[in-house]
Length: 342
Image 1 (cartoon, one colour):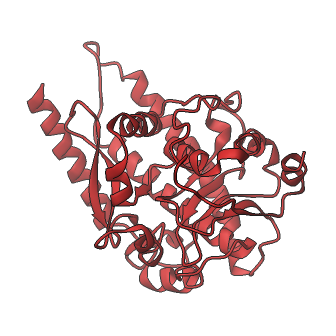
Image 2 (cartoon, one colour; image 1 turned 180 degrees about the vertical axis):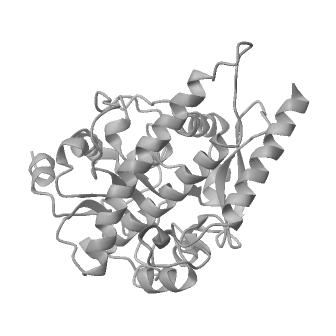
């Protein structure tokens, strides 16, 4: 069994390496570019360095060799921690220059760019997963294909379909400097939270929020979530396009309920819905083991496509003694502001 796990791990690594080495700029999807993709960053090194110690942060990695904990924590340098093969050097520089800076403000344009880059990373991850799925087959003794693998492939293809629709619209709007469709909720803290993340997600595919309709038509109702360190403190946000209000409604309710403990909720929300979460090393070292076990458990549910309970509060009072100041709220969503003020 151990030998089989080592073989699979080496196989996955080989497929991933081949896929990444041959990746082109994601804008090749629109015949805009045929240059090789560089290491783009979902969170720029400039921002991630704000919570780093000696240039490194803590992140989780999946143990592909079948270790008992499945997820393990490790240090990662800020230059590689959030890297993915996304854009060519020119497009990475030209499109994102205005957000790859030490300061960060909650504006539709800023969050539109983070949204776009998070979608690019998610497209890359899902396309890489399809390459892995296509590299092997699981069959039973009658040579019937494994149903669970087929289900994972189908779910990934659905995600790619909707992501492509969303990514296309965002690209068109960015090219025309139009951010009028962007809706967001953001919280600006005066100090740095000891974690950071960003990720794209479509909450209509999560049964804890909505009945899942696998054969519904494609839609561009995805979103991005994040906590980004900056010179003026951390910025937490959720961003979506106008028209996705029904999909986002249960997420907005969670934020309203969590207003009394926003740092705690933002950490829980990131563990639940982003695989790209990073921790300040000194703070992480100070967290008790039983708390870290909870972090790992919540993140593992996310990584293995299981579902956390949105009514559960597993990290209660984790920041009780931190003394975070009440953040400033920014939003252009009228429906959210009405709920928040009740």
